[in-house]
Length: 387
Image 1 (cartoon, helix red, strand yellow):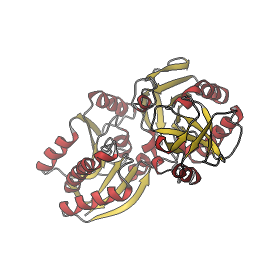
Image 2 (cartoon, rainbow, N blue to C red):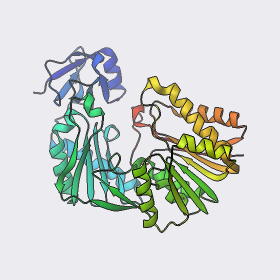
Image 3 (cartoon, helix red, strand yellow):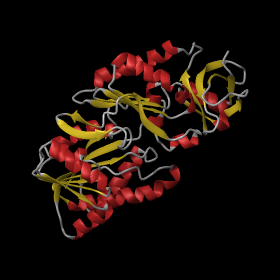
Image 4 (tube, rainbow, N blue to C red):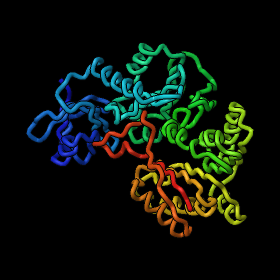
């Protein structure tokens, strides 16, 4: 019989709204539940609300895995895994790399599984999923016969869960650097040493959309390893990509060679300083892409983040030729879509430019948004026409 955890009225309201997280402040009694345990969740009248993964250290005490009284066994987990697979079979096109399991959105909270060709990367970001890690490895082996499975459990969130940061090969042989393809554009990635799980898969569909706007002279700021730049280069005369990371720029140049893209140049530079200097020099571009890291890591940093987003978008708007295209993103969950649009409107007013919203985009469809859980919607990408 699983341990019972009782939650407050406020916690019950969250569960009934089908939000997957119950915070520690909404746990009224936990009966000695242990970290990583699968527990039965009840209200004050002992009515069963479902099952959850229990965390003893995190402020997120419960991660709901079922909203009814069902047996949690291997068949239960396999059925959720198969549901995630069916969605990807429907929506993933023209790529050899995508997110197979997106945690809470797939009702598999704190589990990430990404596919890169015949290799897989796994993240288990809570004690409950950490305890199930071997089962997930076995399921991937059973269904895909992979060349390699790599864990990338270096994320800071594991500190909050009392879990060590670890990474490395857990099955198969080290694939080293592999080449993935995205609508005909090729990228070299290292699954053990790269950012996140090897690449930024959440922007894939936005990169593909962006290439339809590529023309003339293009600036790709925060280019990282050149993914947006190389898509935009398909229609542009010349593309300049900039990033502060020397290692990212080195990889971007390798990716340009992979695609025989001789109309792309990459430079190591501080983007804020670069944009300032280019604006002062009177430089003009037909297309500018801004894909910065998350400026707002938490709610307390939102005002500073707004200032940062406004600065780079203001400078970009000033540097765009008449009728130019600005592709601009934020991956900060704490920056809402409305707040981001307001920042862009303020930048447009200060730049004295008329700006039209042409496309409003989000993360790729292999990163679906669970509508009962706003936290799963973090990426906002706006494509704007600047006059």
